[in-house]
Structures are given as C-alpha cells and as structure tokens.
Length: 327
Length: 180
Image 1 (tube, chains in turn red, yellow):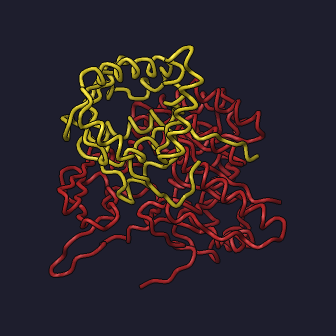
Image 2 (image 1 turned 60 degrees about the horizontal axis):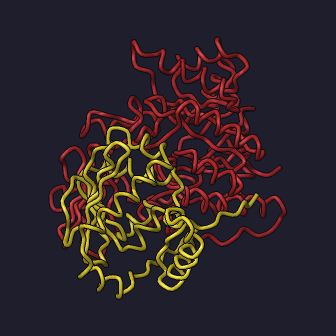
C-alpha cells in the first residue's frame, strides 16, 4: 500500500495546488486561534473550508482540519464550534491536541474521525493506546524527537496509525510544551497558534548586517553574504561568555526523504509535510517530489534524488532525530 | 511552477533607463486605476489583508531606479511611483523578477527571503498578510492588463508573452498542470 502524503495548505489556493500536485491528504485550519498556524492572511473561513473539502473530494483527496491549540478557559465554545464546522464541511478528520477537546469531540461528534496532533506530544505506545481507548483516536502525529527504531517500537505496540513529519520546519522540543515564544512576545503556539508572531518580528538590513528581532530583542545577526536568519528564539544565535552560537538548535529544517523506506519498514502510515505558512509554489513542488518518492517505493523502484534543499527554511537540512548523530 | 533552484534575472536595462525619465505622476495614476481593477476582481485578496488593508507598503524593485508606494486603501488601492527608496511602514525589496515571480506564484516567498533575494523591513505582520493574500489570489497581472485594454487584449497578451520570454521577468501566471 502506498504511504499517504499529508500536505499543508494555508490558503484555498495552496489546497488546490497540493491536490493537483498529487496530495493524498491536505491539512488546513480555520482563520482563528483554534489552529497552530494563526498567521496574518492565512487559513480558511467557513465557506472556504466547505469549498476546499469539496474540491479535494472531487479529486480523490481528503481534508484534515487542524484544531490543535489548547482552548482558553471561558472560551471553549470557539473550539467546539470549530469541531462542529469541520464535520459539517465534510472533513475526513480533525486533528486535536487538548484532552478536554478530544473528550468533547468523542462525546458530541461520535462519527467524526479523530487524529492526535503533534502538539499533544504523545511519544510512547502507552499514551497513544490511552488516547485510542478513551477517545477513539485513529491516528497520531508523532513528535519530532523520536528515532526510526523508536517509531518502530511504538508501531509494534499499537493499532493506532502513525504519521510522521518528513519535510519542513523543525522543532526539537516536545511539541505542545514549548513556551520560548511567550518569553519574548507573550504569545505562544500552544495558546494563540503563533510561534514568533509576525507582529513581534522585525528585520533590519543596514547594508552590512541583517538583524532579526523578536519582541524588540535581537536574536540573530548575519553578514552580507549569509542567508537570512530565522525569527524564532530556538534558532537564534546568542553570546554566552566568550562563545557565540546557536544555543538551542542549529537553523536547519527537516528533510527525511531518503529515510522513507526505513519509515515504511517501521510501520508508518503517513508522511507529513510541514508548511502551512508557505506559498502554493512551495506546496506544489514539495508535494510533487514526495508523491514521486512514495510511488517509486511502492513500485519497487529506487528513490528519486533529493533536490528540495533550496526550499528549506534556512536552506540547510537535517534528518533530525530520526538519525541521531549528536555532536 | 518554477524549478526549485532559484535563478533571478535582472530587469532589462532599457526599462531601468526609461524609468529615469518617464513622468511619474501619470504612471502613478495608471497603476492606481489598474490596481483598483485587480482589487475589484479579487475581493478575497482584500479580505485576507484584514487589519492591514490601510498599511503603507513600499515595493522596491532594486534593479530599477523607482519604488512603488502602495496603500490597499480598503479595496481602492492608491499607488505612487517615486524615484529613490519611497516611504512606508512595510518594505519589500528585491529584483523586479523576484517581486513579479512572487505575485505570480512562480517563486516561494520564504525561499526568496532566506536566500536574501528578497529583503523585508518594517511591519512584518503586514508584509506577511500581503504575501499570503496575493498568493491565495492566484493573480495573473498580464492577463488583467490585457483584459483592461479591450479590443487590444490579444495583441497586448502576445506582447507581454514576448517581453516575458526575452526578459525572464514573470509577467503572467505560470500554467499549472494537474499532475494527478
């Protein structure tokens, strides 16, 4: 069976581009704080979601709706409405992270398929089986801290489908538990759907150096001939004593395309591409390449050579935790 | 869609030279009228701009001697072409081909940014909203321009295709092919 390619769409145009490029499945979110990519100009209103799902279905693709932030006390109805509207739009499944919201969806929308978001940071078979037993979760998106053997170990002990990230921005933190952005901006991906909100990001180019600032703090400075820096604290460059370097992680992004055969052997069902904040051009190129790769694998042909590096954030890639080679 | 290895051509010298002498007031009026037509044809683009629909943007083609000051003005864009850097709260600078490629979905904005083919300064949220709104609108400025010329649409379209091929500057939206 061909591994499923799960593709990002920040806009209806990106959804159409992903579907046309061969996406089996597209994930997207509503234009509010219910999804973890709550950026200016992105996401879907209710009507666009209905049209997007219809377009995908007409082309044989599925749509997953990410409602993967953690509801605010007193405002849970916003998340409840999102779940109801996703089902009404005809979504194949919703991607949830919060235990309370999972319980709500399982009780009030028993026919709605539930996927567990990476934001839930479910990283072992015991917790995954608990989500399946208590809420009927059918699929889990694994956090990006696991090696391939660890993923195989999880799949050996659960019937829940697993989905893993293979391309795009990389968080090495246990997702759902990173509050770095909050320290500089007061806003976090967990509660507000924004890591390094654009309203707090500033770039200044004086012709010699380019500074990236977050919440008024300079978090990276590069010279004329270097690539532009990330606006996130985790990939910032800091000075401590006499040493200057990337304190949390190097500014690279994930590219696990050459590990796809190993991930298949490890029992992975679906391969997820990160990047709802990226353009339809990016979506189309990445999807086309990954679709080609899984089709080649299914046909027993060699994997195509990778050529996605120029599309990577920071233009440098890693296989992340899948292949641990610590410094 | 373009090849992932981004290669950005430079704007034709003849255009850069001409823009040193072209009177800018009439050019600004023509571009404002054209932008209003585009905005009218793509109402969702203005909706996506949200709270940034009154921001003063500066689009700076670095290989031309002009900058374009653009305010979306809640669906009735105002454009002023100036010589030099221009004034605004959000600035996007890069070769003309990069800016036009971004508009037409030929290039990915983040890839252009990380490779520093594009430079952004000022209000990042407004810039992001504009980028996302334009990307979703699937604009074809060449087609819009040809459409505005009525009976001359076909000739203008042919001319634009010719200029695009010669200069390498994406003046139209690349044709998309359903892979699956």
